[in-house]
Image (cartoon, rainbow over all chains, first blue to last red; front, side, top):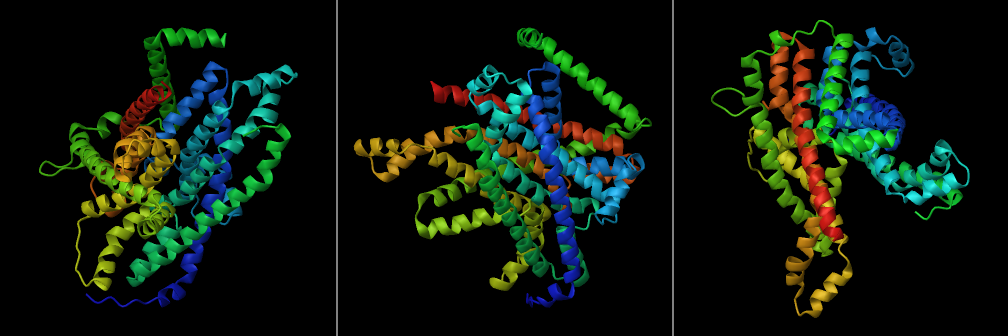
Length: 242
Length: 272
């Protein structure tokens, strides 16, 4: 069983790999952005004192967390035509240079809903792990709930759960490879493409593995930079001892 | 007002469950009316199709049963593999800790789907080139190997964290009793560490159960693949996919509730 390695396929088909990398990058960046903010809102809803608000937050989290991501993607993609229902997605897709809007946005929405539940759980855990005295002390000096949450509790909680949130973002980057099952041309899809064009799956998979490693390491490094330069300030301002 | 509602439902748990159930049914029905008014569940989900999705064909295991089988085998294997890797990384003996660290970091950085592809497509080539052995494995075997590799790396990190959380005084106290290192490890450290790890390992197993749907890509006819096979034939995606979403939800939700209960139990034991 002789197998001759031929790494020149990577140079011949480098455009495919670059396109795939850009597509993965787009999915990851937009996904991380939205899942972070939706996660924060759902997490805050879960810890709120309003009974029905926190119940709705629990529904959101339990529902989207317990259904596999691939099922969510298939459900959105095969049951609906997103661009018919929401025409603004077409404009948005054109603006960021995506050709197949339905596939891209189905994958993106599934990624956002799936990851935002984990972010929400992390935020909730962070807020609940802070001592209750923080909230009470902030209220004694005349802040209302929103001010106390914004200035005192939330910055400390965010700093505390930055590690878990980072790992959820890395999971989002890795999970974006599932978009290939509904036909989004991202990195893993291009591996299969090169494999079926040249029957050189081994070389393509090696290159893609290295690209994924690069992407996850770069994200982890960026998040630690944010932690060092942006979040430490909030800690000093609020005087927390986290 | 809010406290009153919370207290009332804490007392009457059955009422709370009933309220949730009605709420969920109303929401689901409203969603279906708005999003997909022409849904026809009774003609999409006949007895034969549901039977195929849950149990597969008559003479072979398939469907939801195969999902459970796959998850069960992968859980046992990855628990053993993850424990060994985690202990190897934690041990600090360079000959075993460096390869273990490399293995763990590599598999934690790879997407799950890539691991499945590697095992299914690239591993036979790899063995052929470097060892001259011809390896052929079925899709199911590849899936089990891929899950074991991937999940062991994740569980190894949990095991390492659990072992690190044991205070140093435990070692010293056990050593003063006259135990050697091996005895200390087996009788003192490991039991305590495993008790602390139970919640995280269980939630990892829940995510493994959800991830079994990924073997769809290499053609193992488990629950999700069975559903897509039926969907490709009759093309009633809304009905079929909402059915499998509900079944997945019920299984994963039950598992994660059991995990939460165990977590509470463990916390009580640790605090007492």
